[in-house]
Image (cartoon, rainbow, N blue to C red):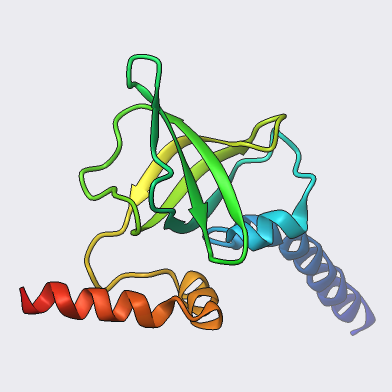
Amino acid sequence: MYIVMAALLAVGAAAALALTAFEDSVVFFFSPTEIAEKSPIDPDQRLRVGGLVEEGSLKKLGGGETVTFIVTDMANAVTISYTGILPDLFREGQGVVAEGHMGSEGQFIASEVLAKHDENYMPPEVADSLKKSGYWEEIEARNAEQMRN
């Protein structure tokens, strides 16, 4: 009986350690505020950043293949650099999730950019942040206006 109890305790401890080690990997994405709180972030760590693309922040560099834009949760912002073709649904003022790593200068280097899939989608963390900032009402009013037109 003691051997069985010891084995169960060892398996439980191993499972707890494994879950603790993967804690940061389990999160679907981090908001810009969470990125600011976690800084500095290891440049080799792959992660996802989600939020709204800030109006007027999209800039094409060089031949237009590389773009930079700012993702915000209305409390903090992260500048993202991406080389490639942006998704068709990508536009300023809309939700986005970028996957990649932090660069040495604090800029997020994205290897993939995912745009929201319909008008009703918004990550819960971003929605909570927008509600706290008061920006949520503006988004709802803009969406209602678009639906009327």
